[in-house]
Length: 249
Image (cartoon, rainbow, N blue to C red):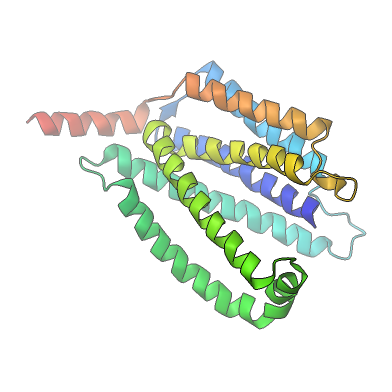
């Protein structure tokens, strides 16, 4: 199950990276240098290597769960595309609006939408299967309900810190910066999980050769991108020029 989850997450990360790069080029008119193209190739290749290390994400024809796995992969790709489109809309709003809303305000609006969507999902799917999806895990947890609440509080604090870093990356690098942050986050989690949980009883958490290569490739790709930032051209550049001329009138 852990291997399947990691593989699906790798599909999402690599797809978001590709979709965001394509949309940034076609919709926002951004141009990338050779080193930036190289950084994108490194990041996506690193994610593919990590997926390969986690196990094949393509279902076997003989597998009884093949249709469910295929459906999950398609749903993951659709989710990655909508996530990339959302980032593009955010990027366009920030870079083409004379006085864009502050990042915390935009995040607050997105949080409200997410709360409604998650509430509907919880009511329709999670609550009817509460014992299987939640209750069984709580009973199996050494800390019980108190431990789960403590973990959720820690997660909430770290997630807000992560959101602050994402906001900074968005202001500096746009939607592609967010995609890179998410890709590098996966490598960071793999390294930390190995350091914390690797043992003889949990060999799947150990950082072997392929995950190590993947982490190095993704990190190098992220560093190359940050060192050689993109310069907006095309449609976005024309829009920025229009706003600048309007401001000087």
